[in-house]
Amino acid sequence: MAFLDKFPKSPTFEELKLEFDKFVNNHPVPGHQFLRQVKDTTHSGMFLLRHMPCARDAVFDFISTAYEEFVKEYIAQVVDLSSLGNIKYAEEEGALLEDIHAAFILYLESCGQIWAPILSQWTLQLLGQLSSQFSNKAVFGHCQSVNEVIQLWIG
Image (tube, rainbow, N blue to C red; front, side):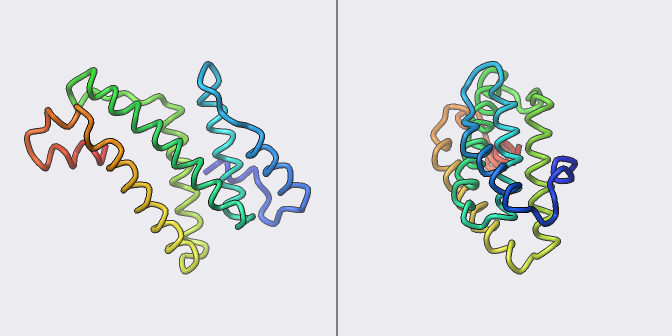
């Protein structure tokens, strides 16, 4: 959760504007610095999610797109390796997913009555979107049972 520590608890208008500008203007472009750009934009988005409610839809859309890219990469690795036990994540990807998770946990602990419905709705929508988008991929063809399919999705 170290990335959240760098943000002020009660940001000024200038601090909000700075993070908003970073979020809006830092569009990740595939290539050498892609993951770094996604990380910076996600961190700005997580800050805005908490302090600028009008930015929620844009932030959730961006984070959904990041999750979609991670799932694409995961499925590509499963297809290449034909084994669930040999999946390798980049350390930075894992750290970014942990940052998102830690931020959501912090939001739920600080004000669960407000954040629980927001996060649960987004999570279910994202899960439905990802399962719909990727359910027809060849990677599921090698699964012999429902347990294997569930294990793949949980991964």
